[in-house]
Amino acid sequence: MRYRVPQNIDMEDRIIGPLTMAQFVYLMLGGMIIYVSYLLFIPPVFFAIAFGVGILTLSMTFLKIQDQPFPKFIAATLLYLVKPKQRTWQKDPTLQHMKVIEKTATTPEQKSVPGQTVTKIELNDLSQLLDTGGRIEPQKLQTQPALEEKSKKIDTSWK
Image 1 (tube, helix red, strand yellow):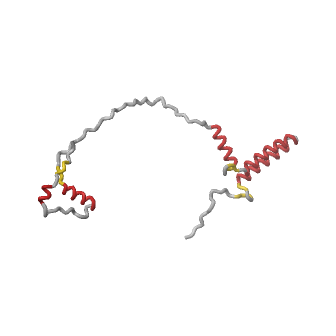
Image 2 (cartoon, helix red, strand yellow):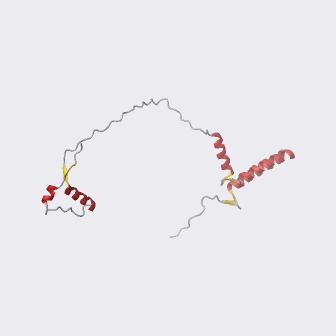
Image 3 (cartoon, helix red, strand yellow):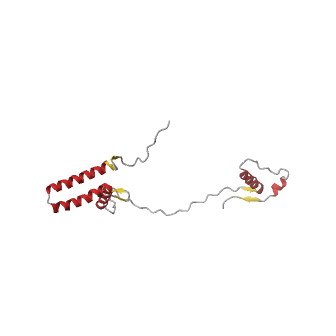
């Protein structure tokens, strides 16, 4: 299943030679305005009108400014000139005023843990359990129970 994927889909279709439909319409309208002015006005007035309309027609047809067609550039310029430059917030009168209440910082009370004593061997077993991720059980020294009793007691209660 092979399908041809169209390329350059953002380009307008060329209708008459290298001209798109919009370009052809601009040229036709400009030509008609120049022809009507030729029929209605005397030569000096006709040349002034034809020069202005001709420049505008060619600009609308072929000129691009910053990769934008001239009609699009003119529309963007007009929108820029018409729209306000500074945005302002319009306050809604139906909303009630909000009051700001300042809270004073309070220090949390420290809870005391009941006094527990942990032996050094128990701490070693716990650290071995954490270091190995529980894969190896801590081995208690059962051969030396006296060492356990003599080991230093560590007080873990909070004061």
